[in-house]
Length: 95
Image (cartoon, rainbow, N blue to C red; front, top):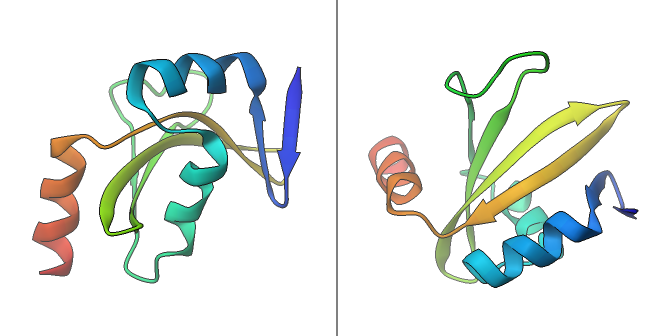
């Protein structure tokens, strides 16, 4: 079952799993895209049929990494967490 939130969409089951694994729901994850200093990178390790991407942005004072794809004019979120590697990329690029 999918949930839509503005220009975002996600699978509710994946959101629940993500919340229990990483402590982040996808409504919170969508806020990373609001950061004017956000960074978006191609996830070349996992891109196969569709181009997968990362958005790294600051949410409530912490750096959040969001895994997503563009599909039918929407941002489809499928994972999010506060990972150290995301912090490294964000700090390196925004200084």
